[in-house]
Structures are given as C-alpha cells and as structure tokens.
Image (cartoon, rainbow, N blue to C red; front, side):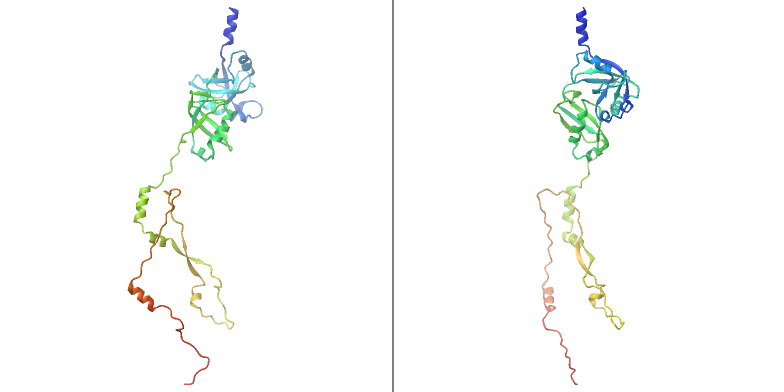
Length: 309
C-alpha cells in the first residue's frame, strides 16, 4: 500500500489556488519583461512541489477564474513571488476578468505544438507597421503558449498593440516554444476598404470628354521673368516714351501645363497616348494667309539730306 501511494503521488498533477496581482505590484524594480510577454511569476513553494511531481517540460499552466468561467494558458518566468501570490501581465488579468488580490486557479497543463495561428488586430493603426509578421514573431518570443479567444498585447516603438487570437491549430490552446508556426492576419477591427472610382464610369466620361479642349484647359497664362525688362530715365527729366514691349510692364506670358487627374485604373506595362488633331484650314483661309505673308525689302527708306522742293 505504501509503494502504491508513492506511485499515485508521482503522477499527481499540480493544482493550487493563489491570490493574483499585476506585475506592477511586484516588489523591487519594475519588470517590463514580464508585462511584454505571456509568462507569470510564481512562489518558490510551487517549484518545490513541481519538482516532486511528474510535470512535462516546458512547464505550462492553465489559469482559471472560477467565478466568471474564464481561462487562459501561460508559462512561468521565475519562482520569486511571495508565498500564496502569483503575478500576471496586465493584459492576462483583463482577459480573465480578475481584480487585484482575486483568487485564480493554477494547474499544470500539457499542450500540443502549434502549427497555425490567426490574429485580428484590434485597431487599424496596426497596418502602419511595415512588417507585421516580423514584429509579431519577435514579440511572441516572450510567450510560451496561445489560447483561442485571448487578446494579447505586444509592444512596438513604445506603443501597445492588441491582437485577438482567432484560431489556433491543432487545438484551441497550443505551445509555441521551438515550433514552426504559420501566421495569418484578419482585417483589423474598424478597418474599411478604400473606395475606388468606378472604372466603367471613368471610361464613359473619357469618351464623352473633349480631349483637345481638356489639353487647352490645362494651359494657363503665367508671368515669367524677362531679361532687361526694366525702365530707363532721360537725363533731361522728360518721360521716356514706352515701346509696345515696355507697355506690357516688361513681362511676357508663357504657357505651362497644370497637373491633371491621375488614372486610377492604370495597368502596369501599358502606355496610353492622347493625340490632338489640328484643324485643316480651308481654301479661303489659305489664300488670305498668302496675301498677308511677309515680303523682304518692302519697307520705306530715309535719307539724311533733305531734298529741295
């Protein structure tokens, strides 16, 4: 009977009730490494009891709030807590609906190795991160396991991002220690797809639009700098007569193009040329232009000697 009792004691699991507190209540220096992960701090007596039991390594535990029927899973970081107390990350206490000093049930657990997990960010600002998978992979190094339905918190660039664990395989709770796990992301909560213009409507507007008129509308008259466009003064104080060029305040106009509306339906590798056709002048206009063409040496000459009349 005595040997049978030892055999039964050897395979007994760990199951204890503790008062739980957030990591900020831990005596000593601030422990940010605990707050950034998914591991808890337990008292030394828990380590003594675990060493006498047949516990599967790495040590994983199921934490249960019996009052609200909420549970999650975690690993253990250290055994330095006061007797009868256990310290949890704040996000874990929120998931379990626990207050400071409430009782939590801690029991040993054996979880399968993870092969797949799916996360949903709780805010659209998570999309501002350039490489979300790399950031998540680095943050999960401080976790020992994942439980479906938990909302985990990760820190990146002095900002906390919350992600809900939508799915885990091969079970609802998995171990992520030394595993090759595929990760997927669902659309963040509150995210809306950007609205794009209707391609069919844009094609109809383009067909009905006067391309030549649009190009002319893009041209505008702007003032540009003209060299030697200043005014001169006479020595006798009289006003200098302005030439036609000077009458325009020494400024000329130059046609420039405004920036148009981008083509949102542009396809990579395709080119589109917009050509404008000039109207062909009629025969009457051609003959009239010939009569007004410039002719060389047609001006009147002047002589320095006044002829006598």
